[in-house]
Image (tube, rainbow, N blue to C red; front, side, top):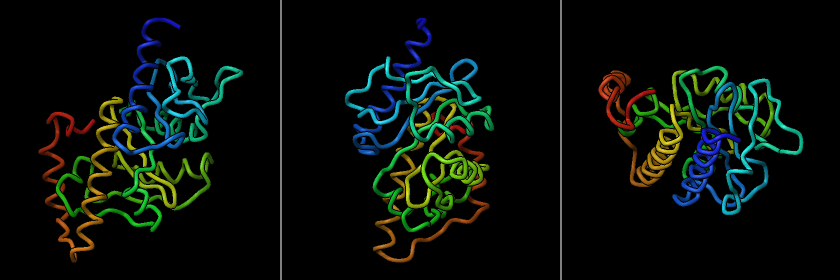
Length: 216
């Protein structure tokens, strides 16, 4: 393992720790990957984040192969497929945060109740239909839900955030959970006002090149 790979592996571990620290994942739930050279580096299957180190991170080729004796996350398929289909994506976060997952359990998309939805690429956050975890079917549904977007919900499961970097992917995951939390509270208060597609399109353009809000 050379220095660049060690740094990349440490970044994946740090992102996984960050998700746990911010309450988006717990225990062995969720997974993180980063594009690396001609493939990716991904968190292992069944290893609690608190016990995870750089040596546990699994290198994988885009054809889905990986070194014998290692076991990548059970969700490696959608990580691999998103990276293969979306060259602008450099890292992917999958998590089960409370509010994102609550809407996913109900199979509900998130409408434009706050202008920050523009950070996700459009006027809504789609919820992909249910498919069993780790399957090619789930990967196909996730890719469809991510068309023109950098986040989506997965019905009865959780969420995905895809960014140009690990920092951006984690930021998107946190922003999505925040928006879902706000929407959940607003629904208890009354009927949230939904911004127009035109307004969100304008905000998407205004976000371009602005800090972590920038579209990748």
